[in-house]
Length: 271
Ligand SMILES: C[S@@+](CC[C@H](N)C(=O)[O-])C[C@H]1O[C@@H](n2cnc3c(N)ncnc32)[C@H](O)[C@@H]1O
Image (tube, rainbow, N blue to C red; front, top):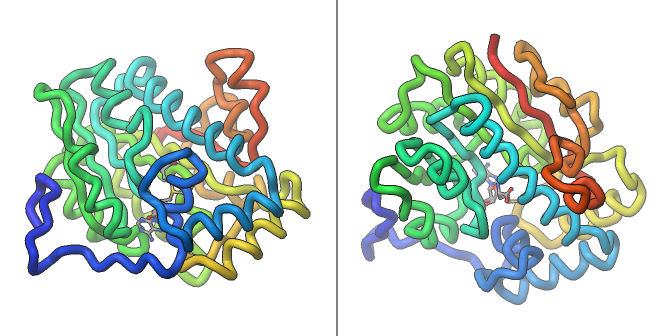
């Protein structure tokens, strides 16, 4: 596959539409069109257990846009590594970053072949900047860092973004080791932005939703409590307001702040 996102016949992605996948279920909740009956069935089952899921997912997307705006505008970050990208939606990282810094360099990474298929929309950035897409697994952070280094200069500050993906990494896959490996590669002044589903917000409904999802989907969700999410920022300085529900991270309007979500988030800087 070449880096314009074109898959040749020999390496055309193998897409299994019979089992729900997080990228497509997420797309369904966001009102997209890249989803299949199995994804919609899983999405509906989660929604029945936890009716607030769509509002929560939207609040997370709003956080994503706000955090990129903060990083580009206030923190002066020009390089972004967005892992667990998802199917393109509104306000993708490169669009928000390059609207502020046209020369911003953005590398996306996801392991789902369906995201690869839609990657062209992610590569359509400002000509003054660079966008790249890597098909890679977060559970192999060394490979992601090596591939991203073709586009990003890790001797200078970067923002590593793990937005709504760490709840898809189970404990057996060493989530804290993965994040530690990524943050160890970041130069001083680099940022980690992370959000993931909480185990300690609307506890019972969200646990029931997780059970519904895990019965139907390829990935297994592992929700985490606030203290566990804070641990992802070990060795970094947390930016105010710390680890909070996504809608409470520097909301841009009263409407954003009033949203409800079951996602913790935080942003940390490497001293
Ligand atoms: C819930 S979506 C989040 C999309 C986007 N970051 C957002 O917040 O809107 C999770 C994404 O992470 C990807 N993902 C899950 N596990 C992954 C892994 N081990 N390696 C790479 N990507 C992964 C899925 O394919 C999916 O696109």
